[in-house]
Image 1: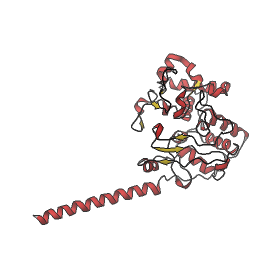
Image 2 (image 1 turned 90 degrees about the vertical axis):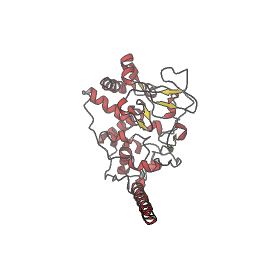
Image 3 (image 1 turned 135 degrees about the vertical axis):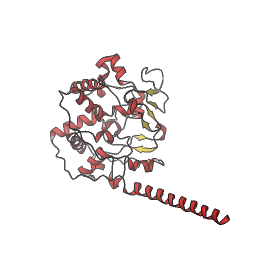
Image 4 (image 1 turned 120 degrees about the horizontal axis):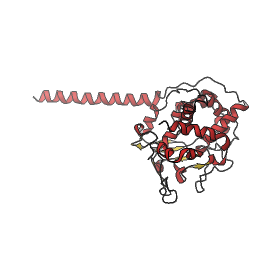
Length: 313
């Protein structure tokens, strides 16, 4: 009887060891072999049209500059500090509920001169940096990977022309187990041609994707967006300065994102004259008035197309 018991315990022990070896091998594979997304071989021509389009996108649609510049959060709308465009260094850490400490990169030529156009393309569309390093998706590369190739080329062309700023932000570090999970998040881009502007609903959908509206305007639980409630609002952002409740700015400093279809039914297209800011600290205001006061004439038509798509939700 004792022999059978010992044999059973030995089998259990060997099975446990085998299971641990399999788990360890799986973790090593994820950490050392993922993400597995190659760098495309491309060279972006810096045309005047691309640079202009890229500037428009980077400041007003994909809003690269909101996170990759120094922001003055003690002022209304958190405007960018002049002369810091693309400098990087904005912090997304545990204080804001992130699973680690993540810092936006310097995207001026000071840092990106060491990147090929293909490497920048892979960063934007797949979230993979040099050395096959995965990026935490606070940068919405999962959305950017659904854009048109030409828009990605335009953003690359524009940031290549930014004035170089000598600055290296701290290195980002993910907490365990996100440090492992991050390797599984990047995906190969699934590009979408820009719809014709006459197709207002699909053109609006394209803009909503590029702007990442869904990230802030969808309930968020246990580290995931609740996609069955997409655009229903209700995501909360706890801030260092207190609580802001979106519908009534003066009362508190806790932000609860708006239900977009419901809000549109109450406000018509007037709401869409305002643009959300894409930063957890930016919720010290509800929305940025008139795209920081810039490009209103150009953006109005695209805003209305966004609202037409949202009315279809």
